[in-house]
Length: 113
Image (tube, rainbow, N blue to C red; front, side, top):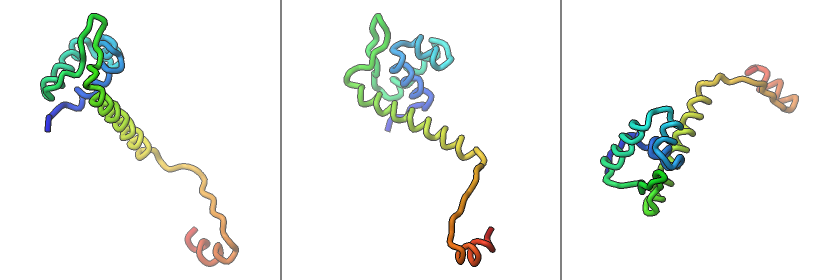
């Protein structure tokens, strides 16, 4: 199995979305050289060239569309993890309403509540 850095994957996603190193750098809040270094690192670690370099920027090589789809899924999963962590940290709040019959509320619920 090829080893790669998770941060490199995030950069690859940004380049695929932006279509350029400078656009990805702006989206990530890093400089152009960092993005170039991360793209090179990912491609070297995996042995896969992901982008076709053109005068207009970086385009996902057609034969790498499946890889970019998997990277997009990883990004979505990472955002899901972040949301789940935010929810786990949030305190429970709100009103709980319980509806019951008279008998059940007097014999079972009253001692609990």
